[in-house]
Image (cartoon, rainbow, N blue to C red; front, side):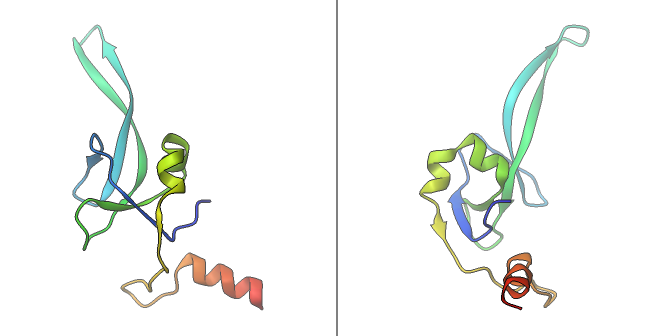
Length: 97
């Protein structure tokens, strides 16, 4: 699993949905019977609500954009809005204790 403490710019051709998910079109297939293209998309991360144009990348982003991922800005993970601990915090506690 990718370290969630990184922030990258959303690629220009990426598709950002209302729920904050960011998709990248990997392939386009032409359906002969219907006469139109269908996009094959991969989820590459989640948009940051407070920041325009930035996102938290996932494993797919690292595979598709390795050089961008290496130069990503690191941030300290913050608490969730509901007060629960993040996965990174839970993992650190298990390693320490």
